[in-house]
Amino acid sequence: MPVSRPNRAMVRSSLLFVLLAVLCLPWADLSISAFDPWHELTRLSAGLLQPTWPQPGTLVTALANTLAFALQGVALGAVLGLLLAAGYRRGAVRRLAAGLRAVHELFWALLFIQLLGISPLTGVLAIALPYAGTFAKVFGELFEEADPAPEQALGVKLGWCSRLCYLQLPLCWRQMASYTGYRLECGIRSSAVLGFIGLPTLGYHLESLLRQGYYAEAASFFYALVLLIATLKWWLRPKLLLLYLVAALWWLPPQATVNWALTVRFFTQDIVPAPLRRGEWAEFLPWLQVLWSEQIAPGLLNTLVLALLALVVMAVLALLWFPAISRRFGNSATRLSSHGGLVLMRALPEYLLAFIGTLLLGPSMLPAIAALGLHNGAIIAHLLGHHLNTLRFREDAPRGINLYLFEVLPRLYRPFMAYSLYRFENLVRETAILGMLGIPTLGFYIDSAFSEFRLDRAMLLLLVCAALNISIDALARRLRRHLHLSEQAKGW
Image (tube, one colour):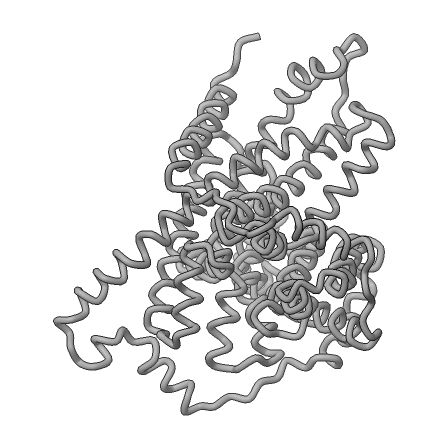
């Protein structure tokens, strides 16, 4: 059977990404610097098999805080995103949404800590702002693709509020509700990761205990996070959402103490480049050149190298993994174990997986590639597995590897490419923040600048990171259009 032009384009694009990843290998640090990784892995496995349970109050408090941050942050992000989506046709609104979601939650948190300290409001805003940009994009695209017939039948021009309430929301409510549930799952992972920079969530205890090698003590918090996300579809009920949100506001009111003098100083002095702050305008360009050569250029290079290598690992794992959860391949035992592995890898944030990998192998790109590949590969494999279970085959269809290569893969390669390109945007965002674990991506230099209170450098590096994410988002969107994938994998 001849290969159609879109399919040939997808194959060429796939091979191009593989080639780019191969070309990146000379710049990739894949070393193992840990003294005895196998001994550390044995200790970690023993701790997971024999967990030590903390005081019930400690675990319950960490769980409640994690949920409270997630519920409030996602709720505020959804409301702000909905307001932005109402005007998403305007270029300024789209650019604002892109800028909000281009900065990772951890970077937003580091920024708000300078203004609000380690407070509940810091955690809520750190989740809400990037999620508002994401909600705006997804809701706005849903509104644009909604059936225009009802508005045309009215024959009158509606204001944005009337159009939103009486046309767009009723037409798109089901998809919006489904996507909001998915974002809450993401919000729980984000909330847990905020604990790694001091907020009192599950991640706070995980970071402290894992870094000290108390694996048995950390196991209980690890299992609590997995259980919380794995059971989401059972305890998340639309009728209970308002009750959950009220409880979250009661448990952890989004409050903070604002020092207005420090806030004014932050915007008027701290984030102003040092030469400009001193009035030495002629020194600004040399200052920028040094920052470029020592931090921006190597940070950008390492971020892209890590993202491209993780993309290929993610794609390979997804293609190998998704048949294992289908009724067409394997047996009930293999499907159960494979599905359990997918749930585990999807539930754990990339940052936590990379943190554990760094403890075992040392601060190189290897644990980061593995973490990004496993988490994102599990997400794509889960989605493709559900696609596979809906396919119908002719009665004389081949079995085993022939069924996979000649029937399944050609029919599912288009959604696979769409999901991979959507996840690539997420890979670049996550790659940047993994620098906070010692890998010299942009996040490494941003975290160092915040630690040294060089906020002018931190702000400039954040802008570079945001520009990179916006550029990758635009490139992936153009590639999806070129490959006719724009309708596939919406919102993922």
